[in-house]
Amino acid sequence: MKYLYLFAGIALAALIGAVLLGRATRVWLVVMLGVIMSVLAVIGFWLNKSDSVDDTFVEQLATAIPPLFSAAIVFGWWVGYVIIRWWKGRA
Image: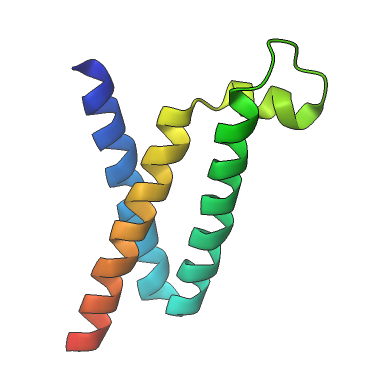
């Protein structure tokens, strides 16, 4: 249960960050950062399941950032993007 709370807390922090960034700047910046984070999360998932020896810096980075963190950040970021699009559409 503690991992569910951790996931929710990280996702909420990313959601708030996306909404604040979208309010302060343009929405396309939120989209671009979301795409970059999504691609990096997929690469991290793929590299995290590789062999047990971390030969490169990227593999060491993928091992250092657990999939729980990267998935929560990406999930929260895209939910924040949806909220900011809804918010700007109504204004």
